[in-house]
Structure formats: C-alpha cells, structure tokens
Amino acid sequence: MARIRIRRRPHGGRTTSRRVLQAANALTVVVPVFGLLRILTGLFHWILPPRLLSAVPELVSQVHNTHAIASGSVLFLLGLRLLRRQRAAYYAVLFVLAASAVSGIIIGVTPWFWGTGCVVLLALLPLGSAFTPRPIRGQFTPAQVVGVVALLLALGYSIVGSYLLRDQFTNLHTWGDAVYFAVTTLTTLGYGDIVPIIGSAPAKLFSVSVVFVGISSFLTAISLIVVPFLEAQAKEVMHAMDRFRKRSLRDHVIVCYYTQVGQSVAAHLLAGRQEFLVVEPNEAIAQTLLAEGIRVLQGQPTDEAVLEKANLGEAQAVVACSNHDADNALITLIAHDVKASGRNAQLRIIARIEQQQGIRKLETAGADFVVSPSTLGGRMMADFAAGHPSRSAADDTTTGS
Image (cartoon, rainbow, N blue to C red):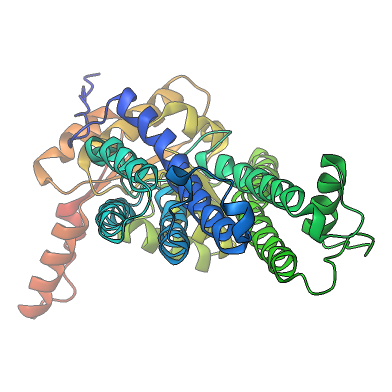
C-alpha cells in the first residue's frame, strides 16, 4: 500500500543563539536587583545622620535620595516584568536607564551611580532578540533568583543599617545584636527588647523602612518563588490524575486538535454521551478544556508517543481535525500502523482535508473516512440555494473505504 511521505517544514522566524539567551537570563536578574540596590542606597542616604555620612567617601556620598528611590522603584517593577521576557518591558527598561543616566549627570550625582546604569544599558542593547512573550521554562528560573536576592538584600540592609545606628537603639551593640534585630523585625515578631531610643528620629525612620522593605521583599518572594512552586506541584498532581484516568479509557474517540471542526466534533460527542479525549498542543486551550471538565491530553497529535498516551490501541476512533492537511495525513499514517499491526483492528480513522484532490491520497494512507468540511458546506449551501435541499452533497465530499 502506498503511503504519503510528509516532510515537516521547520518553523520560520528569527532564531536566538544560546549565548544571547544565557546573557538575557543573567540580565533579567540584574535589572530588578539593580533597581532594589538603588532604592536601598537612597534610603541609606536619606536616613543616615550627617555625622555618619561625613565618614562615607565623597565619591559615594553624592547621591540624590529622591532620584535614587524613584528610578530604583521603576527599574525594580519593570525588572519583574522583564523576567517574563516581555519586549515592552525591555524597551521601557532601556528608556528608564538612559533617562536616569542623563538626569543623574544633570543634577550632579556621583559618577558611579549613573555609570553603573550606563553599563547595564549597554549590556542590554544587543539582547533585544531574546525578549519575547514566550514563558521561561526550567527548574530554577530568573524570577526565583530575584526573589531570593530580594530577601537577602532586605536582610543585609537591616543588619548593616541597624549596626551603623547601634548607638541610637537600646540593647544593640554587636553584629549579633544587629542580626537578631533584623530577623525579629523582618519576621514581624518584634519582641520589644531592641527599640529606638527616645527622640532618635533616624532610628525610627530606619525601623519603618526595615518594615517596609521586609514586607515588600517577602511579598516579592512569595509571588516569585512560593506561588510558582505550588502551581507546579498542583500541575504535577493534575497530570498524575489525568494519566490515571486515561489508562481507564476504552472504546473512546480521540479528537486531534481542538480547532473549530474539533470543537464541533467534541460538542456532538458530548451531547451523545460518547467517551472522548481531546489531544491539543496549545497549553492555554488545554487548561481551558480541563477547567470545563473535558478530558484533554496536552501534546502534539502528530507525535506517535502522544497518541500512545491517549490509549490509541484501545480507542474506538481517531478524528484528525487540524487546519493543515499534512498534520491530518501524519495522524492517519500513525493510526493506520496501529490498525494494520492488529493492535486495534477495529479502529476507525476519520481525517479532515481542505484540498479535495488529496482525498484519495488520505484513503490510500489508511483513512476510513475523509471529510472536506469547506467543500461539503459550500455544496450544501448551493443545493439549498438551487431549491434541492434533499440532495446530499456528502456523497462527493465525504468518502468511506
């Protein structure tokens, strides 16, 4: 029996090199951390008393507090969006870094402050191709790195700041006391044994900033680390349950691709209380179907391993509903191999086709029924228009072997 050989075309579009992706992964972490460092720098220069600032080298002390906190806050928020490889966030970060550097030069802040921003800007410029809306996959994402770094920076800020202001706190004399104060404050325990002395405005302002930074860092860590972890665990449980349910599927219909045709097929099967399973490669569509209580297997229907997971050997029928004839032909070949091998000799293979001249080829490939929905619909509409509603256009557009 002749078979159709299908050569899959590679996906078009510009590719991104591995080095560019690695550099982009690193810089997506650097940008929010850089913004957080600016915020902490501005808070330090705002809270520290003049006598302590005088001990800081002049090259470092010339920082405009409002400029540092404002630019750092914007970069931190945009950096969180940048972690998702959003191109709009990428261009926004470039603009903020450039504007911050120019404004820093104009108001006369320390060179290291606007210079570091220029370095990050120059490092980001050649990496634009890596920032697309696609999600980042992997066990340890840049977002999780930012969450951990945010917590560590908040802890370091609290420890160093409280030690520098130790003479304005009661019972705070050593680095150990500073660590104790930082942990109890950031965790909101607050035993009350280390508190600002009466009349010490810098110590009070610092304690307020520690609470603010601690809560912000904690919420950031929760959203970037804990929530994705819980979601991943929930998905694993759901996938395990799906695998258990799919093992019990027998005499079911496998609907490949949830296109408009696939949706109509599924709706009709659902109305007839027929067991069926949708195989859909799009994750968003698969999640929507799961939420609606429809059995779905996320995967590429043209992959033989995916159809095996759909229990093709025990299925009653397989319906290929792709918008592309090549995909439907490949599904037909895979299903016919299972049928011809005797593993499921009763399997019915139904394939959709748009190019009418390919009907005979699909029949040769092993399809039991080949349907051209567009041609069928057009001829039926012509029959109705001509006043012959009883005439069946399906004879010409639906064939069975």
